[in-house]
Amino acid sequence: MTPERVSSVTDLDDLLSEPTPAVVESVRKGTGDLIVLGAGGKMGPTLARMARRAIARAGSDRSVIAVSRFSNPETRDALERHGIRTVACDLLDPEAVALLPDAGDVVYMAGMKFGASADPALTWAENCLIPAFICRRYAGSRIAAFSTGNVYGLVPAGRGGSRETDEPAPAGEYAMSCLGRERLFQFFSARTGTPVVLLRLNYACELRYGVLVDIARRVAAGEPIDLTMGYLNAIWQGDANAMALCALDHAASPARILNIAGLEELRVRDLAEAFGRRFGRAPVFTGTEAPDALLSNGHETARLLGAPRVAVERMIDWIADWVMSGGPMLDKPTRFEVRDGRF
Image 1 (cartoon, rainbow, N blue to C red):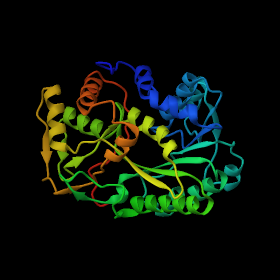
Image 2: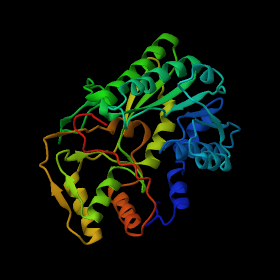
Image 3: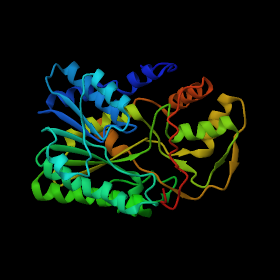
Image 4: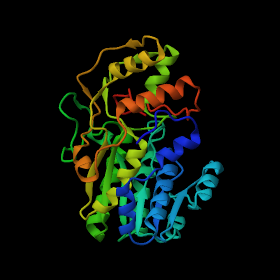
């Protein structure tokens, strides 16, 4: 059962890292330690903690290892307080990657999005070179590698969104390099027999960041909301964490693709008006809805791993309450309204 409201960062992180019974069973079946690469980002800390909590409940002696540059030492300290081993590593350094601990399961979360257009060379190195190093280091391990729904490109609204079998149509350096990342994982999976599952995410939300938070804050501030990108998917980050960990059971060679996305096509206008009702103020709109948007179909993943636990209405309630009560924010806009792929 989900709470009526979330009143603190501690409660929020507990909620985001609460393992489902399916996650507990999945980690029970796994062998060797579980390593999270790129664990210092927005999702990594709660995913690593969910894995640690699930392993404890399963009565397993597996360790969880979090790897990142850890530019924020507080993130590293918090992970270690929760019983997670941390390793500081620049994943662009192949010699450092070669020294990483062994692991039976790998969750790959590294990558670059924002600033991709300003520094495309670094974007391609982050998104394509690192996977090659990781695939060599962890050949034979099960790998769940995060990707993005941006690789599909814009599709007509009202048709259920892009499916895993659809041909990619990436726009911009970020999306193209993410498809390149997928191709590297696919290449090494086929060549070495390494089981891989590619997770095309679209979009994970919590109370401090995410597309719903972006919309809520603009409504609360009376700022205009561009309706041109008029539709989207949203999924609670805790559900995305659980799906990613359970997806390791479906890693295969050749690599498998799964969409992690909310099951509904959400209309930006409707979301803004829902927040407006909670805030007691009318949203300000600009632009006109285009007939297409970045939309993914998450039904195959829901069939395999279960549907998301947290409904969109509950996310809206939580976020509205968080914004009105002055809860802390990460101040990292998603730029969901971008249609040309320039991030």
